[in-house]
Length: 315
Length: 248
Image (tube, helix red, strand yellow):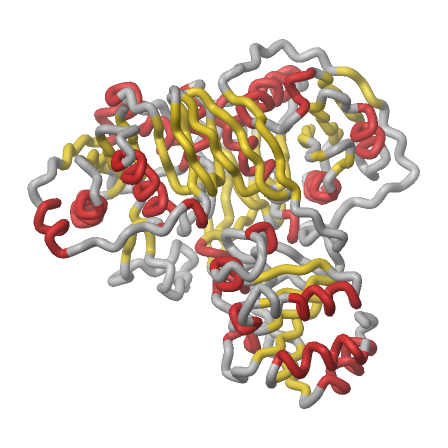
């Protein structure tokens, strides 16, 4: 039987929903236990949120001042020690920038390879994952006698809900020497009143066709009308129309909203990689031959500067 | 200070990937190969540090079959001083790559190792982090800004929440994000000059890289396709459809 340890991702005392997606992935392993490890300077609030997730057996806290910020070099030795001490068969993190930073470092300390971007579980040691920007899906098998370390492709797994679960919360003593060679300086958070791009039910994205930073206002306006997050193609980010953290695609964020509206986005393969799990894709572009229409559920061809304000008014 | 840059050869990003009908891999015959775009950014970052006088030497390293010499010439033409070709007929996984790179690091003693944040073939995003772990040195992944002074690197990282800045003591491992820089174009005279630059060849097997923890790829399949939907003629029709689906 499998025993899973999930590393909680959190910021400012809030558990990231990516962790609840990891729980869903962990449950696909049909394990005997799913424990969540919270590494923080003050883990109580985050641990309380994790304890409510359906399927979680136990929440383990490591409260250390060094854990105030998620530095991979500081967290990885503690994660490796916790994975060793608890006789776990699987160690899972979300495939977010947090998980991608930390998981390989922990895996290397544990002497095992790592599975990136788990899309599906077909057995305790068999998984599928995307390669070549999602243009091929590979089935991977990890050694049957070794711990599995994986990151969970969040767009492939719905978030586990909060039910009546009240998993016990325990402090975990971790014996690990922590380095001081890596120091947190600051985090400049995108100040947005809009929903978070990675967990939003609806997303409105603009591409190069939007034409300028000023013109991006029409994307934001439509997003606000729909209570949607705002995203962008790489072309729009490269052109300086909007900040980097709005980028959707192979090298940006991989998302799976219920509704994705692509405006002035032609649909490069690297962008389509980031949206292929969306429920409904709507494309608005002036070029009816753009590749985005090959994946769009609803296509509308025309001048976005006329159509988008019209759409906003009609909703 | 020396800088070691991991410089991987991958299928060019413009190639449309085809999965072989028998599921044994992706078609690679006659397919255009190029440097991993993120590794070009890594090399550019290293060259700029050399031009600023912070580094004296930039070494590129690849783990690839014997036919990868033109790939290394490309990196030398871009400006690297010399190259190390770790010859392996078979592709290596991130953990094995990190173990091999560690051997090079132990020999060359670089102040910085710079890698792309991911290779666009296997999309793993692991090798830099694993190398940093095995080397027991700092890592600064997904870098969009890099400043090196006084034995330290100050790195701005592109994280989901925004931009995070960390400070790391050297030696350290950096992995590059898209917007760290725009790699330079190679000029014809540089291609000529690169022909005279040294390429050291070493067999992967001779490095004494530890085995274990390998993951096997058992089957390749094309992704599930989304089917083409409907075209609407105006906004009213679009809104009606969205309402029908309960999305507006």
